[in-house]
Length: 77
Image (cartoon, rainbow, N blue to C red; front, side):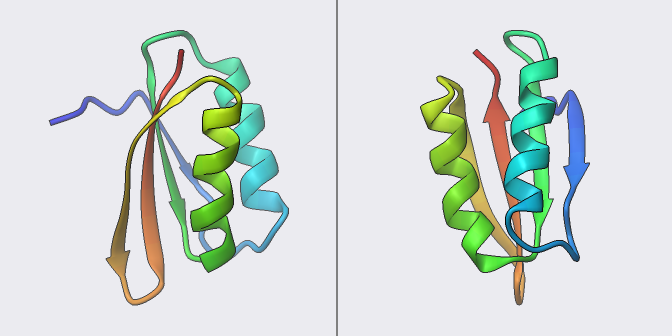
């Protein structure tokens, strides 16, 4: 079980907002913290993990939790 430090709820928003918001949030967090990102926009489920990896963070999981909802867990490096 992963201890989530902060949750960013981007459900109901479309690109580029979830991507931009998750990037800003990750930059404000400390190394070792875990960011949980909730989204319901399919393109963001692909883009956010790629963005987090390119920032040097570790994507712990990308889980589909509903018909069109995803939960992404990112460990900040």
